[in-house]
Image 1: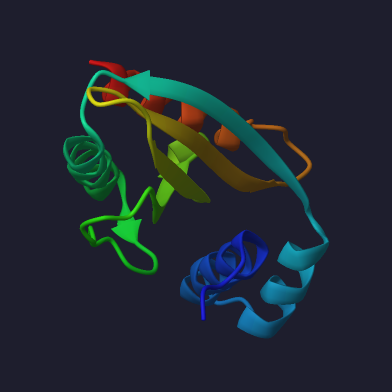
Image 2: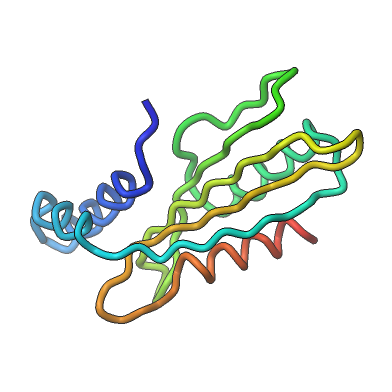
Length: 140
């Protein structure tokens, strides 16, 4: 079963809190109550579907750690790839990045890129900044 963005972010923040000597359970609870900064970007890649999926998987794989599956099955029209990366000040804020690659025409594919991060008192816009950074890498 795939975890939701909120569950993944809460687990990641709890792990960071535990490293700092905090209570993982309390951090998980607080994380679930925090607001999320989410940003979505739609891209069109001039690549056939299978090549686009491989490119997105490679770029996201370099950006962070895979969450869920990252494999390509022949004959599918959509593939979701999800990673956890770091954003914000000093790269301390976990960001869940999800890419949904959809078959376009014969030589193009569409990508919906979504990045989500929890926001504390200081707004870092880690979701927005991470989505823009990865969209730039995909467009190169």
